[in-house]
Image (cartoon, rainbow, N blue to C red; front, side, top):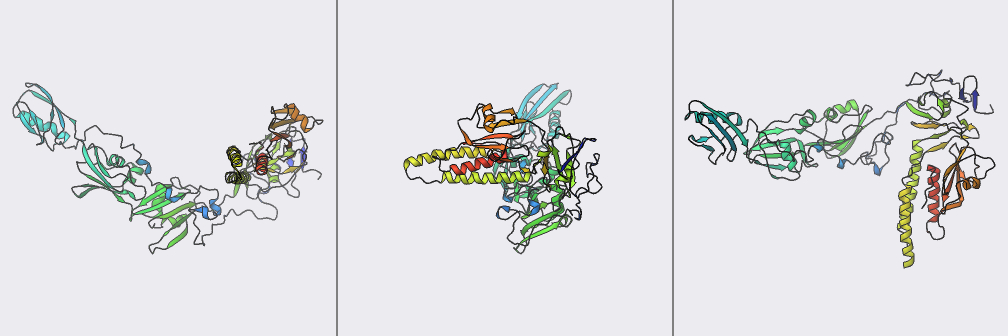
Length: 583
């Protein structure tokens, strides 16, 4: 077959020949899960379908530590599924509680169980046979004094019984036709000791109605390294009167009601079992467990895992003080009992059997294809409908994320080495040292701008109307350019613009259409970018319809010590990003 592309005029559908492959020309448009053909699109002749099974990480090396992968290669399942983490930086579960939101509040209403104490202010109003109104203060002996009634003992009365106590005292003098109104206007603040594993232990004033969260917040919150969120005791006169587990408040909203008294002690104990959890979970954190509740199921109930979790990596120190690594299935992990300071990573150890490839350009029909792993570029193209009058099927190219990432790493590595060389360059004299300082500043500015350039990850797959086959990766973008006779000129020219293609024009003719070179232009270094993504210098590549002309910036090769390195990086950036970034 002279060409790999055949156009069927009667249907307007473009098919890409696959050699000896027998592939149905049209995918089932209504099935978004797996395109239906005579044969599954991912199955190649004589090759079994991909099993979809991922290779597990190698945990036989005792020095291998997946929780600090900077010192060793990441296992296959860890390369893109989630970000790495330093476990000593994980916050405790519930850390968000103590950010000052409770410390800045003050409860003014009176708890019905509040007991009157010296210094409290009580509003007393009488009308009828006896008229009287005043705000009375409870004295040190626990009495208030009402004229013509005398002292009334109210110490220890709670708010609900205060009115009846005063009314009984008044009734002994005025037996008839006296109405009474009593209101506890203000209560005395209490001073509470907050101690144990808190950031700022001390004695803090507040209302008796303030809950323990307010006092712990005033003490700077619970210490993230040692403090327990599950073992908090309220002590009065040396005895524990309440035990509080804040996990019940965090997960269920339950907080025990307790009326604090002067000199009560809130003691935050040290945590017993702490487990650091990360990976494919919704709430990465350091979780705390008691000896009675410390299994994998307890962690799963708190953290919430992603749907694709299949295995759990556990690293820790056993009771015999020996380190260990365990790799458990999710079901086996549910019954696993934690040791103190275990580290848990949730992973997905199965790979999808399908991948998603998108097709962009002047196409008819759907633009996204869900295909089996092992599918090749031509297998997808064979099912893409295009308008042959508009689509430039001879200039197809592929954009790939992994290629873009590799381009970015290569450029950043070169930039880092360039910056390091400029900053550590030696000078033979004071004048040369001054020149090197200015040069280093110039290079640092260049590095900063160059690092923001985003490589496009283009893979050239077409040349002279022929398409090379390619094994697809997930999220590949297959670009079918639109036919164009416009030439775009940019880079170091006076006025970047688009010019209609003229076969009589040379590269300089197109540049003259923009007003000519800028002052910073390197007139001998001009790049041509073809519609298929191919990039080369103007003496190596001719201008064709739809091309882009990029005039590169000039680098002073005489005065700059690292001019050669800079020129190489500028060229790498231009090829990877189609943008000319100069000094």
